[in-house]
Image 1 (spheres, rainbow, N blue to C red):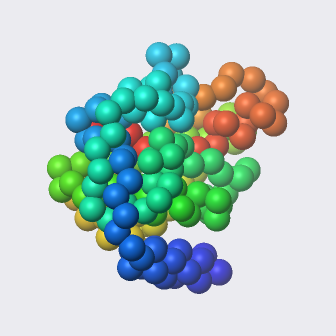
Image 2 (image 1 turned 90 degrees about the vertical axis):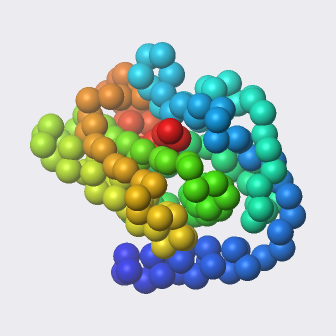
Length: 177
């Protein structure tokens, strides 16, 4: 089932890549993307953690890429490393952006909520990071430009033992370097 979904995502990415080449301004590589705020939690603000910054056009961009590139976090369901379909367009935009500049490197940081053992959550965070990596690879991002790490439950985005906190902690953050 997961293989079929990956193939569908890859086909969608190829179809999108074949579409028109309108110029849409994304974040520039030198703007120092950050994925965590000063407290160590997840942040989706985009460039410099504020959602602002200088945006430069790149070849292959599609309408809406600018907004999609501001999202740097992929969230997961409980005990799952399956990427939800609502993140497909975002990941495709990041793949296009990475294709525009061979110097862009991204670290994929996998996380889990506090439920489960420490060892299990490290493994789950790694499976999540690898799932995102696989999608980016299928969309043409060279493997050498992607790295993964799992923090398991050690770096929560939200402190609490409720469903909302748990859902914010089940994530992969894209950290541009």
